[in-house]
Amino acid sequence: MRSGNALEALIAGLRGCPAADADWQAVIALANHTLLTPDLFSSLVRAGQIQRLPQDVRVYLRFVHDCNRERNLRLRAQLSEAVAALNRREIVPLLLKGAIPLFLSVPEHVPCRMTSDLDLAVEPVEEATAHACLEELGYAPVARGRGLARRQDAGMLELRASQANGFGPPGLVERDGLRVKIPPVHSRAMHWTMHDLLKEGDYWRGRIDLRHLRDLAQLAESDHMDWTALRVAMSDRGARNALDTQLLALHHFFGTRIPASCARRPLVRFQHWRRVFTAKHPFLGAPLRLAGNLAWGARRFSHAEGLARRGPLDIGRRIVRILFYSRAKI
Image (cartoon, rainbow, N blue to C red; front, side):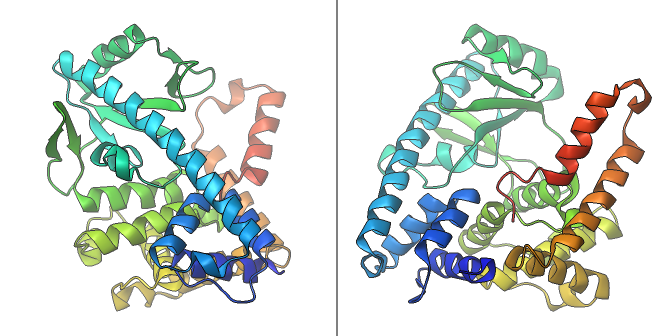
């Protein structure tokens, strides 16, 4: 089965409409790579379409879904423990990305989303105290990483200093005696988009994080999303181009309604075409992907500090990482 057909079949499944002629081995391989296997199973169950799949496919999807549910329950308990400890120090953390639905859920309906780690933010003046608090719980910094981890946990915990945004203050939420702050919906959408397209370079590299794109689609369905206001809040033309490129992908794959103005600029239309083409045709799109990786690598090195102090081996590792590292991207 061609990669494009597998991608189309996966998207159809996520939208609750399994393709009749799908090569489920290829679809599952893509779902596993993009961390969407539990979501695929859950979407088909909600739509009442799971019985249309072959039995061995249903058994496998349910197995992965159930394993992920158990892991999310452990992550939820881990998050509650960390929040409780911070609250005892009069620190109310700001939850980010996958930590938000985990905290807002109840054990009977824990999210099916695959969550790699728990992201929290605190005020800059609270950061040192928060780190000390978590170290008292047994957390230790991960070597060559930004996270904190313990041997017994299901995932890492990443703690950072919070930053202001243009969408107003976060909301205070209290559940089961725990207090957290939740960013406004537009801040969450901006964070996912800017993290993928600008921080990780997907705009230049022509990659798509399908799981985060799915997150955006679900966010748009559950909350009132004013994409025009989000576009106005972008800091410069490059950021707006990146957002418009992401919105075109959102509409293309999940049918999300977006402003017509997103498709006006030829550069944005080209970037959208390049991302979709290379996702559907990895072999034919390899030259485009390589050119994008080289452009991103040049941009990274031009902004790198202390490059001259790095040894040849370290520079070589960075080049390989830029050219070949994908981590659940298509």
